[in-house]
Image 1 (tube, rainbow, N blue to C red):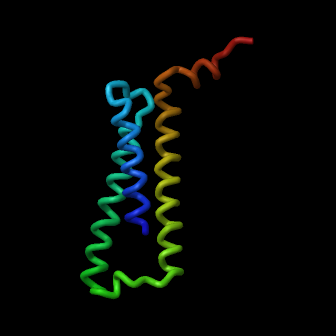
Image 2 (cartoon, one colour):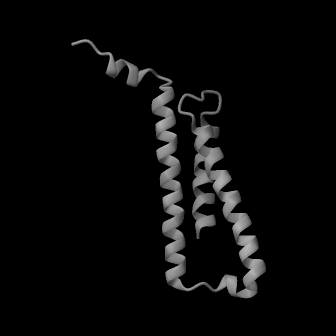
Image 3 (tube, one colour):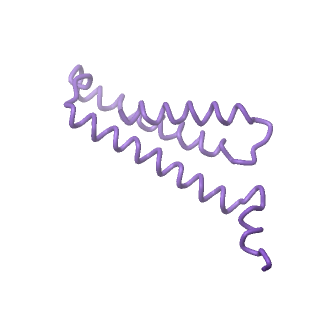
Length: 104
C-alpha cells in the first residue's frame, strides 16, 4: 500500500508539473522527485520482501494493509511539508517577503 500511495502521489505531482512545465515557479518538480524517489524506495522494499516471503507477500492481513496505507499517507504528507518549506524559503513570487516587510 505504501508503494501504491506514493506512486499515485508521484503521478499526480508529475501531471501537475508537466501541465505548467515551462514555468517552475511553484517548484513542483522538487515534489515529483521526492515522490518518485519514495516510490523507488518502496519498490525495492517490496522486491526484497517478496524474495523473503514468496507468495505470502500477496496476502497481507487487513490490519497490515491499513498500517501500510497510513505510512504511505504519512510519506505523502511529509513530502508536501518539505515542498511547502522549500517554496516558502525560495519565495518565487515574493509574497512572503512582501508580507514580512509590508509597511503600515
